[in-house]
Image (cartoon, rainbow, N blue to C red):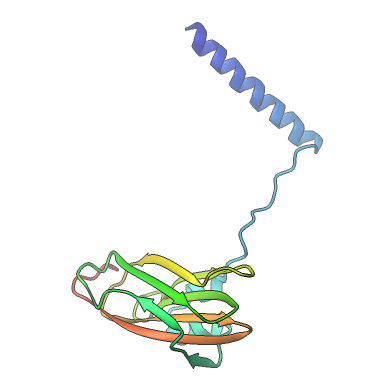
Length: 155
């Protein structure tokens, strides 16, 4: 009982101190370090709209982009996809599952000197092309791989 009381008093005292510091302006909440997300691209329902909202107007087919995904995914709820870009100065990689209700599955930005590699798991409702869009030096490059889904995962 005594230990519970001590724990409660420590918690109450610490909380009171934080509230006092925040009220006096000595402690300010910091902003998140994450970059702002492209809401319009993630909410787009058509692949063409996603590409437009990413700003990728002139896509260049590239063999320097490798998409690693199963040819046949037995379960569309968990489809492992990895994208590797060997294009110098890769700034971002976006992954699009073209026949999903919301095609843009992932978008990752890289800081200077970062390796152009992304690995994730997608949820796919049906057989579809998986498209990777890579931004490097202000230009947009793309590669496509078809993934056949035997059991859909999107609904």
